[in-house]
Length: 330
Image 1: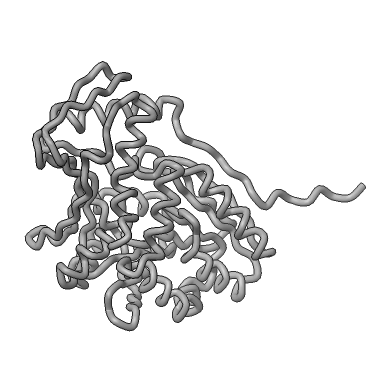
Image 2 (image 1 turned 180 degrees about the vertical axis):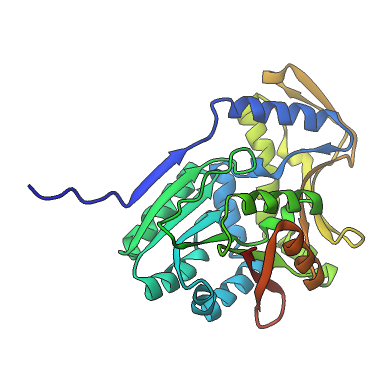
């Protein structure tokens, strides 16, 4: 009898059965307070995930091109910093379009690799995992569908090998400095000394360049932002009229962050049927939906030290717009 071929793909769905109630609770609280706010994690339903992938292709959104350029040039050099690498773990993996450069470099050096993508969208995670397996025969994948802020899965360590954790794009920028430090400390706790964290960070630059990146001419980012209202309509029986709301992105110089809002064009009342709730909006009143903090080299060094990492290497794109930072767990 022939031995059974080992399974190369396993996906665990850790999303709790009370996720819908968590969404409802966050919407109820966020729209009742002043100023109104909604957590950015709720952007990423199926449509939102696809819209974000479209944003990454926009001419104004330099971040993806800059980070991809870094990986195209330096992936082999990055992987060489961890000579005993056996596992890549990616938080917020999405389509894995950028991490595939690192996967290819790791397989070229080590011949086999385990990849652990973690994402909140089950559809995107499965599609990206299956596409990777078609292209890389030495790869095995264990995926986790979860909100890693609520439930951080254990790292899929292989024997005594090193793990490289990927936190790419501008994901770290979505957190306040305090929350970013707390999240990085949480990551450090599931790592071992000698493991690596590759952190993407968007660098400070002119406000015009930053605001254009989050308010493109085609309106894709606006659709992405307003999609959270569509989700509330669908899941909570609300009656948001998207024509009565606008997208706004503004750079807050004092806090070094781009702030994203949904703004009511008129005075209006919105009904949330599933919550038996009415929400009043004044003309010009905003819902704060996201922040994107921008960093400089000193802030990143301080963040690494405070979170329990030793800053090892930094790579920049040709124009110095974006940085990829390798930190080793101390």
